[in-house]
Image (cartoon, rainbow, N blue to C red; front, side):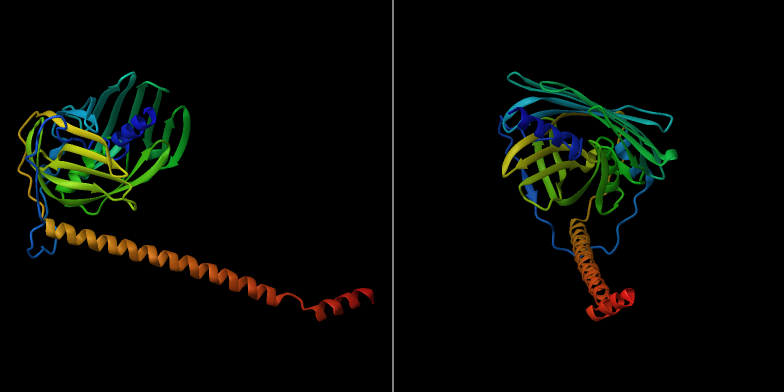
Length: 336
C-alpha cells in the first residue's frame, strides 16, 4: 500500500504537478455531461490572443483541492500564486495525505520570471516527509552557465541547459498560458528526479462537471502515452483561466488517484477567455501525430540504411583484404 501511495503521489508531481481536481466520490454528483465535438468547418489558422488574456493564469490566486484514492479521502492540497510587482514570481504547492498509519507531506516552491510571454525557471524546491524515507529535490537553472544543477535525494547532477525546459510545478502555468494563446502542440520537457522527461497532452472535448468547489464548464485533456495501461485525464475551466478542476489517474483500468477543486479565489477579475475550436484542435493534433509517426518511420529507415551501409563497408573492407595468393606471395618475398 505504501508503494501504491507513493506511485499515486508521484502522479501529483510528475504528470502536471498541478493539473488537479476530482469528482465527489462519496456523494452523488451525477450531473456530468460530455459534449460531442461539433461537425463544422474548421478554421485554417489559430486566432491571435492579446497578451493580457494569455497571461491570465498569472493572476494572483489560491486553489484548494481534496485528494482521493478511489473513493477514500486521503487529504488535501493547496496552490498559491502571490502577487508580484517585480516580474519575479513564486508559486507554492503544499499537500498532506494520510491513510491509517501512513502519511505523506510535500512542499514545493517554484521561482521563475517571464520573457516574451514564456516562463523562464529559476529555482525549484521539493521537500517530502512522512512514512518512509524523507528526501528533497532542488533544481537551479543557471542559464548564464549553460547548466542545470539538480540534487535529488542527496545525489547531484549537472545537465545541459536548454531553452523551453521547465520543472514540475511551474509547467502547469505555462500549459494554461499556451492553451489560451493557442500554442500547439502541447509538448513539454521538464527536469524531474535528475532526468529530463517529456510530456505531451491532447484535448478530448468539453465537459460539464460538478465538484465541491461548484459546477464548471471545462475542457478535458489527456496525457498522451503509447500504452493504455496508465491513463491520466484532467479538466480545466476556461472561465477561470484554465484553473484545474479535477484530475483522475488510472492504472490498468482502475482509478488510483482523484483530485477535486474544493475552493478558489482570484485577487482580481479575470478577462474573458475565448472558446476553443474543438474541431480544429482535433485536426491539428491528428496532423501533429501523423507527422511524428512519419518522422519515427524515417528515423527507423535511416537507422536501417546506416546499418546496411555499415555492413556493406565491412564487406568492402573484407574484399579489400589480401587474398590467400597475395599472402603467400608476401610470405615468399619475406623468405627470399
